[in-house]
Amino acid sequence: MSQEVVRLLMDTLGKDKVLTGESVTERYHHIWKMEEPLQALAVVVAKNVEDVSFALRICNETKTSVVVHGGLTNLVGSTETNVDEVVITLEKLNKIIEVDESSRTITTEAGVILEDIQAAAKNADLLFPLNFGAKGSAQIGGVISTNAGGLRVFRYGMTRALVLGLEAVLADGTIISSMKKIIKDNSGYDLKQMFIGSEGTLGVITKAVLKLVERPSSRVTAFVAFDEYQGVLDFLKYMDKGMAGTLSGYELIWGETYTCMTSPPAAAKPPLPHGYNYYVLLEGLGSDYDADQKRLESLLEHAFENEMILDAALAHTESDLEWFWTIREDVHVIKSQCNNDQHFDISLPIPLIGELIEQMKIGLKKINGVEKVFPFGHVADGNVHFIIGKKDTSDALREAINDMIYPPLQAIGGSVSAEHGIGLHKKKYLSLCRTEAEIDLMRRLKNCYDPQGILNPGKVL
Ligand SMILES: Cc1cc2nc3c(=O)[nH]c(=O)nc-3n(C[C@H](O)[C@H](O)[C@H](O)COP(=O)(O)OP(=O)(O)OC[C@H]3O[C@@H](n4cnc5c(N)ncnc54)[C@H](O)[C@@H]3O)c2cc1C
Image 1 (cartoon, rainbow, N blue to C red):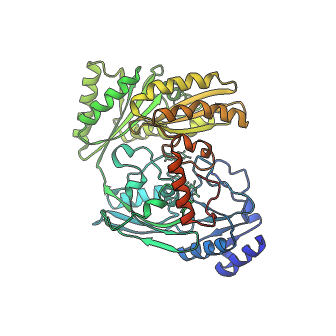
Image 2: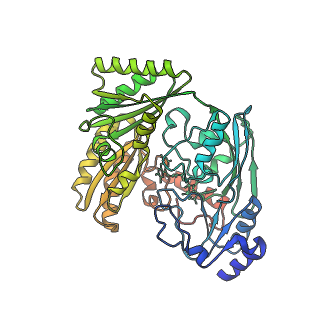
Image 3: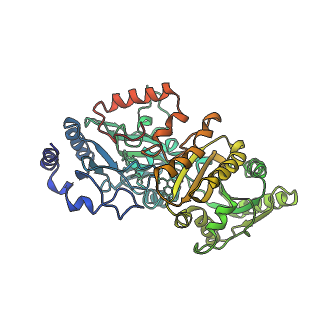
């Protein structure tokens, strides 16, 4: 049957769009695992929505599993495959169709890289606000299907808030297109939302209309230091009020993580000395650089005089801005200092973060085999990341670490995934943050969209 599927795909799409053999194994399933050859029956290089539709129809009729590959930057194993599965890659659906300055929208194919969308918006003096470390590789289809968050959710929301229209293909090949630019549409169920954040399990996204906002003409930023978590919280409230709606980022880096990110082999020097318990990197996006910078400076001075903060470093130039943000965005630096790195992306009520993360750190360090623990996160969104270094990749050690982090989230109404999704790696823990009835409804929806269960099987549910 497998060879029959390949033949059908080649006959329908053309041989040039269906890769097999070495052309498959020279690819990979994740940008961090390029040395591992991709395992798949074939890779369909779709060039338009019809290719996706035909490929899905064939796979559906032959009950062949399909995994969509975007930029391969997810952190939950959701693009892993086996030798019986067909990969559909959207890398050739890489056209930006239109930037509409009057509607403030960008219409794009799904394979366009996030950074290219940001650049196209910038060329029109607009902003696509979504921003995170993997922006140079992540494709907008992958970003939408993971409902990615990142560094400016506090002000602009997650991907979900920025998608106005969508085109997607169902498992049976049906094309569902609602490429509208309108902001409000209560005409029945908002079907596009089902594809956003569903990690390729309900359909394949092929195009999107995204919301743009006016491009702020000023960007100000500062690093601030604290020893108490309560201080981090009080300062958030103070800055949010003081910056009059321009606060766009409030990233927390724990002391040990900051030291790691700003010590050799990391290239960046520390803007503030090492030794504090917490560092916040904040960003304001406004319209008058001189006034915004002056306001930030005076807010920091006032906070310092009133002992709200222990230290602060203000970015004065473009290169300062880049220096400060590279520290936060370059998680590779942390990863490179962790053997067998394990990643976390949890959500929890903001007031509980300080104490709970301390307890988790203590518990993690007691686990035999845990070598390094680096927390950091989008604290204004209640989202904390951990990168953990450990002595081996055994299941026992991985689960011991998971068991230290995930179960406490249940009692406090947290989530095992703030933004990265469930994929393969967090499936076992889904029931800690979703009720049985919710999971049952998810299964029924999956069954409705994809009755044969061909789309990214084994992921999420
Ligand atoms: C350094 C680094 C920093 C990161 N920072 C953040 C962050 O701050 N916030 C955040 O939210 N995430 C972050 N991530 C995670 C990751 O970048 C996001 O999840 C991203 O949105 C995935 O996009 P992708 O194109 O790489 O998708 P992929 O990894 O290729 O795919 C992800 C999932 O989406 C599915 N998929 C891909 N394309 C489509 C499509 N067109 N239609 C349907 N399904 C599809 C895949 O099958 C898979 O299930 C980070 C990752 C890295 C490596």
